Structures are given as C-alpha cells and as structure tokens.
Image 1 (tube, rainbow, N blue to C red):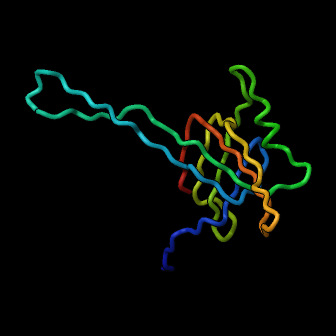
Image 2 (tube, rainbow, N blue to C red):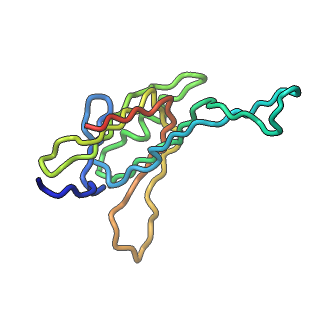
Image 3 (tube, rainbow, N blue to C red):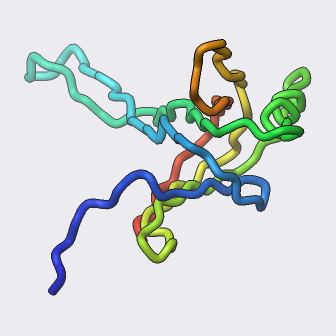
Length: 144
C-alpha cells in the first residue's frame, strides 16, 4: 500500500456561472455553529446548558491576476440594486495530481460585497491582482 500524504493547496479550480475561472488564492472557507446558552432558575446545576444555534459562514475572498478587458468582478458587483443582486452558486475544488477533485466546497447563493483592484507601485515587480469578497448562505463540503 502506498503512503498517504496530505494534499497540497496549490492545485484547485473555481467554477461559477458554469465557467471555470483561474484564481491565485481562495480564503474564508469557514463555517461555525454559534452556541446558545440556557439555564432555568430551578435547575439543580449551577451552570448553563449549551446547545447548537445558528450557523455562521465567513465571507470568501477570491484573488486573481488582472487580464485586459476582463471586468467580471465589477460587472457582478454592479448587479446590486435595492434589495436585489445576482446570486451565484460556486464550486471550489481541490485537485489531485490527475486534476480530479478530491475535496469540493459548494457555496450557495453567493453575491459580491467588495471588489478590490491591484496595489499599484512604481517599483513593484508583481502581477496585478484583483480580489472579490463574496457573502453567501451556505457552504457544503464533499470529500471525494
């Protein structure tokens, strides 16, 4: 039997709107359950009971190199009107050496909340990177 090694984080894809988009970084794949504390006055225990409460999902930030005439981030951000926005489901896949998904995060009802352009610097020697921060209503993990 071959040795099992942890997966590297540098080989991944992001799909949104049916397109596969290349990103250099994805952060914020976090979810948590908030605890509810409760105690009634007649309880013989002098401590609270803790129960699982609402789920909370962090915003996800996606970063990529800027390509001429590619305004997808800003176009999506501009769909925000009073109480309406174009929502999208995203699929973020961590890939193995055969380029097959081994872990998949499905992001539900995502919409942009922030778009950030590159940091311009006259003495810089880096790729121009833009980022988009998205809010969403659910994160589902599938471990292939």
